[in-house]
Length: 451
Ligand code: NAD
Image (tube, rainbow, N blue to C red):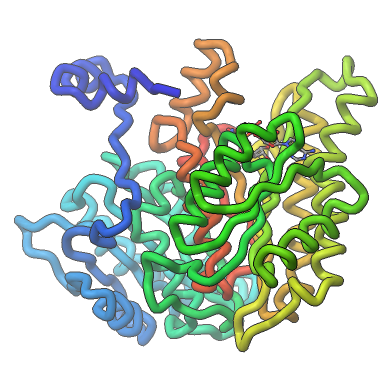
């Protein structure tokens, strides 16, 4: 779906006109392209804790131009600020103001990343206030970023330090173009599970993934992205979508499995297919989903029941089958099976006409957090991704004016692309994200509506 306004706003005339009229100025976002540098330009590390040294070391290991200071005429590509030792709100000042001084010297699509400890892990009111303070300032800064820039945080739990593989994985994701449409969000790293890939351009090499609802839209983009990152992909969709499904599977040298995921034995059929074709299954992406919108006053049983059946009941049933199978449970050292599920910002903020859909998507968020311990015990992970306004066939059907408003109501003033959701899923499916589990990560450009 074309976004003609964003195209116009990025022409010479468009830039002038939108600025003089005070209209939204959506920037062309920096997106991941294989072979392109991770990020171009200096990355400034703010803070003087041990973690800040470790953060600098990690990034030097990626050959980045890591600095402690920036000359007045230079521009930074990213700022990483360590708040891991901050123990009262008054201590925030020096690092926060140091970040503030750098903001006018940022390149387009720049990144600001804060690093801090989990507020819930302390009972000390001043310490928790300081940690919550970092959350609040990061979210507000994300609203203030310009020219496609984003601000996000990494939350360290359980005494972990920046040496945990999951930390490096989250840092690299947030610096890269893979996180183009992620802003105002937090990635929690809670365990030393996971591992960094030998080749960052093929983080899923040797892995086998299943993607449901892969015949079109976001699911097709996920299948393509997992394949690009090195995975073998089983593409699943309903029989009526068989032709489109075969085309997606052929394109990525994967295999197609025609299957309605609400079938009682859907999980078993996926396991049998994986066993027969690949002899393993490492990654499950629960993407298939439907909407049947109606105000609750007009809701009928078929609309309600079908949305619950496809969007959440099927996932619960399939997960039980996967977790009971030997194929999916082979923990290799600190790397086990991974599940990523599609939620929605409607499941967080609610949406008019979507009681059924929001119940199913909130259900996904609950299911993911409640299943996390089981996956962690297998050195694996389960997480959800909550997309906001994404340019797909689904959102193309929204009436013009409503669509135009919905598109602009986020900090990046534009809709996301299916590939933005797919990149975040590929990250959460990778071993580099093994330290993160039970999380729902929003890919919404920091929607201004709702949560
Ligand atoms: P889409 O309708 O374009 O594609 C969904 C796919 O799932 C289709 O190919 C469909 O045939 C398949 N499917 C439906 N029921 C199935 C079943 N019972 N068994 C197997 N396959 C089935 O949707 P999309 O926009 O690509 O959305 C993908 C996911 O992302 C969904 O879970 C959706 O709720 C979620 N999401 C989308 C957006 C957005 O803006 N597009 C926003 C938030 C969340």
